[in-house]
Image 1 (tube, rainbow, N blue to C red):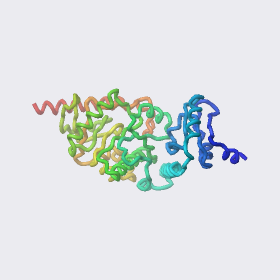
Image 2: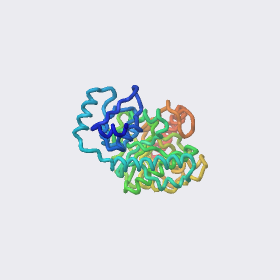
Image 3: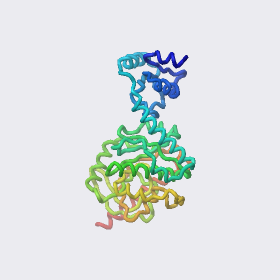
Length: 338
């Protein structure tokens, strides 16, 4: 009886039962499966369902005027075509279900190579985040740059293996689509107020140095005691330092050479002292790492580390020591050149 009634409707309006509700996806999907036009109040998690595309017209929560305008638009719109919605939904389901199987250990980590990340082909800037860590995700979404696509990271125990699998998947995406570099920021990054302008200077500098760098590191969490300064250059009012070692993936730009390094990472090697993805990169021979002094980005201290299971505040002292150590090495390098 309900289905017969729904089929007679020209538009179905979805209104939340209570304020600040999550999106009522089971009801919306049932209406879409019947080929109905759907208008819905927006919700805090509407961004989690990009596959809905234009099939659902959303209006601001609690807005009667918005609802009436959305209904008018729906009535004027052509009949709903579900092909694109269904195709996107199937792709998303396949990726997320495979992601679950990998996380639970039901399939091997090598299965990630066959997964299709939910990424537009030309995308080169990513925010790495886990949808399960809702608080971190929402905090990041509030500051996420407009050209940055959120990537649902791979999960695997221990957590740093899942992190490595995520970077390997992003590297394969880049190489498969002919990208020369990608920018990856993690969801606990603190971007500077002049992020857009500063990033423009950084990318201009890196383009002038094409072929002479592998990674730009926005922050180095722990400077290797044997790290050597290769070059110190002033450009665009900023100091660029090139060194031969790195640690940290909070915000990095990876050249094609680094992307190919990711392909050699072994997720079956469970030695956390040498095989976390940043330590793995650091171990590569003749790797060239560019950083700014002072560091370009910060590290959000109030969130919980999804890799190591402690508050990020423990990183603050380590990062401060790292920056001071690099400044000392730069001073020694410059002194040796005079």
